Image (cartoon, rainbow, N blue to C red):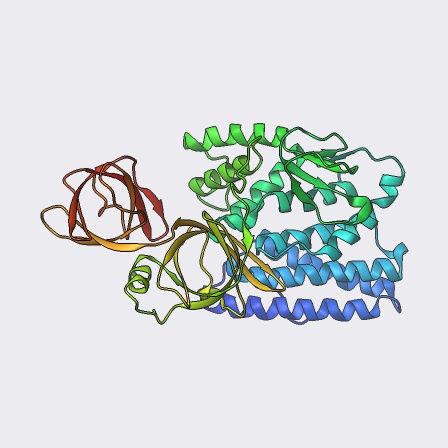
Amino acid sequence: MNAKLPSVSSAASEADDSVTFALRELSAHLSAVCATGDRDPAAALEGILRAEDELRAYVAGGWRVGDMQGVRLAARGLADAYWSLFVQAGHAVSRVSVAASCAEALKWDALEGVAPDPILWERLGSLLRPDLDAGLALIAGDLESVARHYLRGVSYQAAAFDQIDRNLLVPACQLLDMCLPFLAMSRRAPAVPHYLAFPELGAVPRRSLVAPRETAFHLSTAAAEEWLQGLASRLAEGLCPAVLDRGEPDDYLAVVRHLLCRWADEPPVRRSKRHPMGGQVLVVRGVEACRRLIAGDVDVSASRWSVFDANRLSMGIVGEGHSVPAIPSIGELVGVRFEDADLVHLGLVRRLRVDPGGVRCGLQLVSRAARTAMVEDGRVPAQVLLCDPLARGEAARLIAPSASVLRDDSLFLRAASAVYKLHPLETPWLGPGFAMRVYQLI
């Protein structure tokens, strides 16, 4: 290879293009290595190790979310090159090295929200088979082995990276790697929801709410939860360990709380079944764009998506060929309107995943028939989004661009030729670019 990966400390305007170019060149180099492994295994291994060192040095230097797709493709190229060499000349490379490359590729898939790749899991299962045949009953994360890297792959899937903000992915990746020695898998099924895997079948691990009838390996996160709880206490007190240098203390605390929530004995689950459905929808982002959509104005930034399932609380939509700027962020407010209807749904983005069918987005619906209204404090009126029907004595959720609009006292709501005094029931809930608050209508 002629181009080395630049340091992320380079000026952003210069580094972005050079990093992208170097990562693409690295992927092309690894593709060439796959074709030469059967003719000269030693030379192929040398090329793989050189590429691996460059990629590892770049990642260790502090990778950026903007370079993630390039790193993911390079990591997958590295895994394919290792596997090709292992198949063509197994004596030239160890099972552990091949398993490590597969787990690394799964990590970058998970970080970018790409659906689990069955091929990588099939490879990991076949690499683990000799240990299974020898009676492996416990998979631990503290000793270097094929089993450890299998556990790494499971941990990346169990962390639900597709449900956290992309700006938290760097500290999330670091924290999860630090959790690995505290994770384990065994044949013993816990009585709580957990992830399980079938390495003998080479199948993709999945979450289970009940113990399956089939024999499986079950992920135990109890020790990791205990370690994370201690870390959360220190972070909440403003004590950030020096090793946590890839983000702000609040970023690490948000990731810790996310993992503790996902690995709790009662993790969040869908409260009602989503039913398959179709239809084309217009999607807009942010309070102002939602207001215009409710008024009947189609924003120039609106994008078209397809609905694939829904229930009264949530909706799944998929978009094809969207550029990154058109894809909403986790936690963002979006407005959704079916092309053959007038009602506007409001939703919060809870999950983003990329699969062969496009970008899949999971929405938590906060309104199925949003309206606009005015809030007044006797000085300057402000327009808000109204999520619920109006009835005196009942509660209603209001959404505004900032919490300063949703005051504690002396606030009135004017809607549908009626005026309501607002009594706050909760503190404002803040999201990216909006605030939501529940009021009682008096």
